[in-house]
Length: 412
Image (cartoon, rainbow, N blue to C red):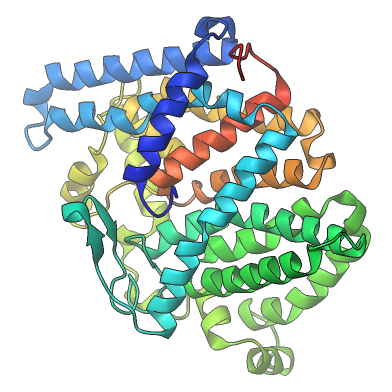
């Protein structure tokens, strides 16, 4: 339900979060939570600082600094409160399957948008629940479906893709074992895999394409690498020949005849390079943001300040700097950026050390889903959609359980 409606999902998740927080060992008994408490305190201090210095920057409303805390502080609680529901491999498998099943409306709305011409917005409860379904996609020609932008759709599809792959591998194993009812389940999941591949391609997101490929060997597991990696390399060779500059025409022309222009043209940016302005480039955004971080390194400029300052410096609007580490340091200060990024990296490393990538297929898929979402945040920030944000912290909570086991509620 989460991708379909953040409102309805919140009505279910909030009571679960309260229940998951009851009868637990104190929050401060886990040192990971203490890091988040420190981060929260620094964020609040930053908002106070921005408010007190508002006269120095009249174009920016200090209210934004306080509203922006809503993207972080409730999810810090969620990281702790959701842990009882992802406390072991069977629990993570159940949640993983729920995320994969919840992707079906995204696939149906997106493919209907591009292939059948569906358009919205479709809404209920006076707009409290909206499926955007912009005619022809948003941007035009790119699948966005019920989300408001193709990159957000690509992010959801990317985090659910490893979990769907795990479901496919599980169904395949059950079918090979000739378990009753496994045949039709395999066909259903295989159909969803085909639909999700098509949807990820149609988002025209290079990040999603990369995730689609990188997730396969990670979810399949090391035992398959001896044959899977050479097979993938062979399949990707024509794409590389068609995309990379400097390849002799003798090799590149046949490759471009084989690989659709929509793929190699997007990968080497041929389709859009003429539309790029210097101020729209990621490297320019990061450069400007870095100089601004140097001006206020400790507590930052405040949430959403980038969308105000960047147009003043470059003449072009961007809502964020397209990198989560840069955005954290810019908005909330370098200490916050270092602490949050360091904590997340630590969770990934601990997950690997605890054997998640060598464990059951859904353990591998869980770690991969969380990691791929982080990869996306190196060049974009889809977490500012609440549905992506919630899913991401649920995945991180599962990684925490893969490395240590804080106290459970008595009835968990």
